[in-house]
Length: 112
Ligand SMILES: Nc1ncnc2c1ncn2[C@@H]1O[C@H](COP(=O)(O)OP(=O)(O)OP(=O)(O)O)[C@@H](O)[C@H]1O
Ligand SMILES: [Mg+2]
Image 1 (cartoon, rainbow, N blue to C red):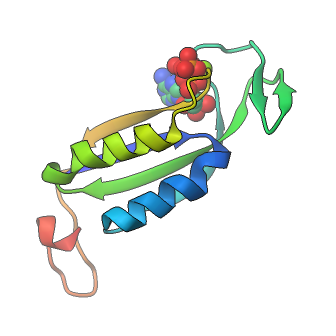
Image 2: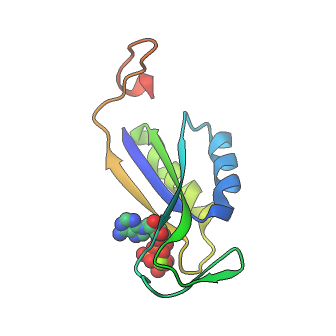
């Protein structure tokens, strides 16, 4: 199992999550965050405004997925979240040791 942590543009949230639901994503966490990438201190467009702040609003989507689904989920997010402009975001992928569904005490992939 892997954790897919995608940082995307706020305006891409709906499209990305719609497609993830269609794909059959077992679950997800969505957080409104602020951050910056490598253009720290350089302005970036957000909703038609130019930000010269150190931190720009973004969305973080976290998904725990079976190894066999990871590539397709990453591809799907990339296809929809990409505009080609700076600030499109990034996807981080981490190994996950275990998952426990509290209600049933199931563990591992069947608890995802
Ligand atoms: N190295 C990093 N560590 C943690 N968070 C990061 C990192 N790089 C990017 N992020 C997060 O992703 C968001 C978007 O990053 P961004 O797309 O600007 O990355 P970038 O490397 O600057 O790429 P680009 O050149 O396309 O802008 C940042 O606001 C931040 O929340
Ligand atoms: Mg950047």
